[in-house]
Length: 123
Image (tube, rainbow, N blue to C red):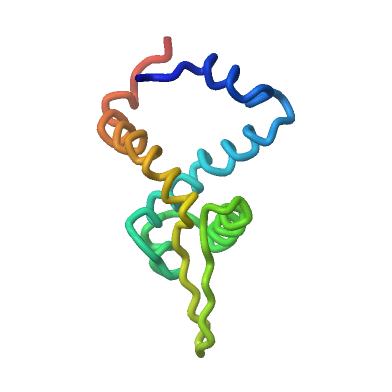
């Protein structure tokens, strides 16, 4: 059963209205880098370098910012191990895994249709 956008807004009064936290969360998880970092972590725990390679084109600053934001949102867990050099691992929290169970079908849809959509004249 598919739920409509109107039903979602009705069930969560104020959701997606201007200034609502739902817009902030959507911005974090649906941003270019947010989606790619979350998708990478959906395959398991990653170290910094692995994430940087997996999410090609992301700068160190943007990766740090994205991980900090997703961590503050409760979607990504950061674990630091006492070692030289520093050893830090990132993984999805239970909330992050729940999100990705729902978001991976969208990621799959984009992967399947992007080539056919690019280059079309805007309507």
